Image 1 (cartoon, rainbow, N blue to C red):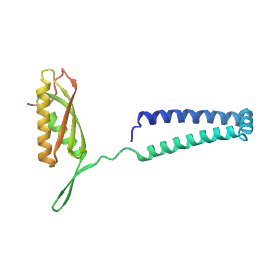
Image 2: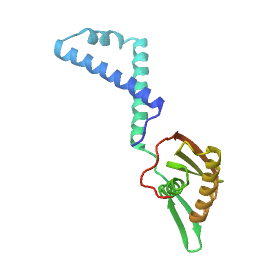
Image 3: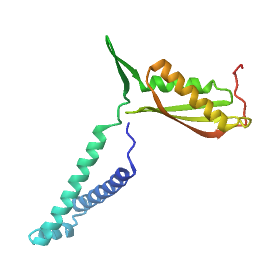
Image 4: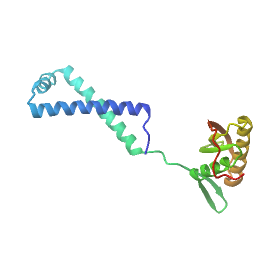
Amino acid sequence: MKVLGYFDRVILALYTISLGLVSILLILIAVAGWGAPLDFLRTSVPTLGGRVGFFIVGAVLLLVSVRLTGVGIAGSPRRRAIVHALDLGDVRVSVHAIEGMVQRLVRNVAGVRDAKALIENFDDGLSVRVRATVGPETPISELAGTIQEAVQTQVQRVVGIAVSRVRVEIDHISPESRRGRVE
């Protein structure tokens, strides 16, 4: 499922509020026999200003509908695979598989308690972002260098694709020791 961006969420909220108000208005016309909105329509539509106003409102609502429908149909972008050609054909390695490998690799680095990886494919090679939780006894700058070197070497060796950058983010310094790990 795609997460809507800020702009699309604002449009969706305004659109939903507008449709809610129109719904309430239609219910009041139908149930209570409230004729003022109908009288307003009868008097304003024949004028040029009224027609221009209704055209603008209708066009904006149509554009918003098309935009939200497009966002809804498009869904989330498909995670791509890394493809490289060999003599006998193409080899596809899913981004998910590389992320899993990097996570396992980083979690086995001494001082790392937990890790998550995100891979992006660029023309100059893969970009790897590692988010890690470390222990308080860990020198972070040394650890980051170790992670960067290990990730670059392992991905190049296993996948056969160059890693152009490895970004290490330390999300949390955890005082708890990791359970079940034998070192």
